[in-house]
Every structure is written in structure tokens, then in C-alpha cells.
Image (cartoon, rainbow, N blue to C red; front, side, top):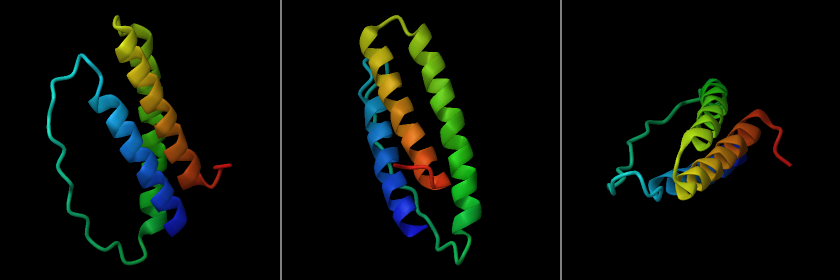
Length: 95
């Protein structure tokens, strides 16, 4: 699971960056969250994160369809792709 988590984290960061630069959003600073040791709880966490990433991809696709600004559309589409990557890594379906 470690490799999947690392790859998912990279996709999450890329997706965060894609949305962060959407022109309709105000600039802000990101803050790293403190994460405690899961002590063997990686699989249940991965399952929850996989489900959330799938839901996020769907919502970002919806937002891309209704966003009036083409750059916002592109930002949502890029972030949706990264969310799908996260889902694929965490479910073991990554290429």
C-alpha cells in the first residue's frame, strides 16, 4: 500500500494545484495537515480515500460542464483526471 499511497499523494497534489490556479478562485495559501501514524489502518483509509476521489472526480466533471470560463473548465477537467488517478492507485487499478 505504501507505493499506492505515495503515487496517490502526488496525484492529489497535482489535482490541488490544478484547482488552485483556476482563475475564478481567490488566491490562498495551502496548509499541510498533521497526519498521525495509522498503525495498520492504511487499507480502510485507502478505501475511504478511493471513494472520495471517485466522488470528487464526478463533481469536478460536473463543475467543468457548467463553468463559464474555459480556463475554469480546463482546471476542473485536469483536477478530475488527477482524482481518477488517485482512485486508480488506491484501488489497484493503476496502469
